[in-house]
Amino acid sequence: MSGSAALEYGFPSTHSTNAVSVAVYALFTLNHASSTVSPTTKLLLEILSYTYAISIIIGRVYCGMHGLFDVVVGSLLGAALSILEFLYVNDFDNFIHEGSFKAISIVVLIICVLVRVHPEPADDCPCFDDSVAFAGVLCGIEIGNWHYAQSPLSWDFPVPATVPFHLEDLGWPKTIIRTCIGVICIVAWRSVMKLVLLKALPPIFRIVERLGLSLPRRFFKQASEYDNVPSHLKTDNVMPSVSEFPNLYSSIRHPRRSRSISIGPQSEADAYEALAFRHRKRRESISSIGGTSISWDSYVKRNGATKDSFEYAKASSQTTGTPSAILSTQERLGVDIPGLKNWSSTDVFTPSTPIDTAGNVNGLARTPSQMRRQDEKEEKEIFSKLAKPRVRYDVEVITKMIVYSGIAWLAVEGNPILFHYLGLGLDRAPN
Image 1 (cartoon, helix red, strand yellow):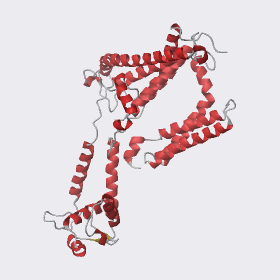
Image 2 (cartoon, helix red, strand yellow; image 1 turned 90 degrees about the vertical axis):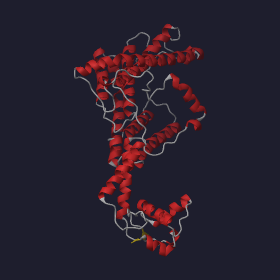
Image 3 (tube, rainbow, N blue to C red; image 1 turned 180 degrees about the vertical axis):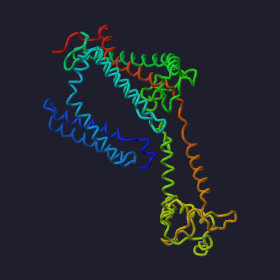
Image 4 (cartoon, helix red, strand yellow; image 1 turned 180 degrees about the horizontal axis):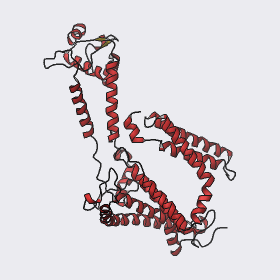
């Protein structure tokens, strides 16, 4: 694994952590004494859990995104977290539901600190945005559960802060109305609060920055460097805006129309990975030459080839280093190169042997300065093809935290309270 891949994906493998944690927790739940799953269903779910975790782990190594040590430590971390969750989940819930404001403040503070110490990504990727959104949801859930558990509107069964709901008592009409109202509230909250916060936060951030308390991140522009945030800026990679719903619907109805194929590097880390691969193949090609070095004159005398075929064969040998690989390329592309079929398995062109304007081989390898200029040209070319990342603003982090905290709070407390006062709730627990 190259250094650029290590920078992009990091240590440990969080994909392995997530996959193993889900699988281990599922296995614990299936084998718990309170489980009512039939033996056949249990066996199938266990096989599915093992398959899911193992496929993710092997896939990360196979794709070159992580080394063996990364996935091993990530898997152990995921298993440990699931064991702790399964053993102490009731104690943690009681700490939240029965705790004071101080207890919930500690939990929220820990989540905010984790957001702040989140590692800087190797390039401008949405991984940090996803983490911020997830952290905001956690804050909203914990705050909502803590406050709703103390409300007379919540149920204590099966756990404290349970939202009153029973399909047989409510019926389908009320259930559908509840769902529609809940979605409308969440979409309205997100749309309004995002606009308000992106307008209100920059002046506050400038004051904080003047006090020397700013916490800049690598890919985010500080408030002192801009006047305002564009109102139609696409700042969310997690939840689409209302204006994007028609396009999403069209892509679902006609998936082939909206499908795009990305060819080549898509990020800085990908570009460095491609350059490293090219350099490695070039070194391998040079070091693996053990056959006869062929010049233009000897190639023509042996095969009666044209100059174009020689140029093609010579250029291909610099990439592959072997005539057999060039022949396979010729067959795959359907290109007829005269004389190549008469090559012996030991004949190899001398890589990086320049030809002057008259078409004569001078027999001299490229100088270090020529190699350096070629590397710089390749690097400039590959980076020029990358999509330019949009400008990102420091206020987006806090905006996302607040917006997604509010979405989670609406789901666990706000909307249930609204349903109660609209006559769409239940006052008693089912028998």
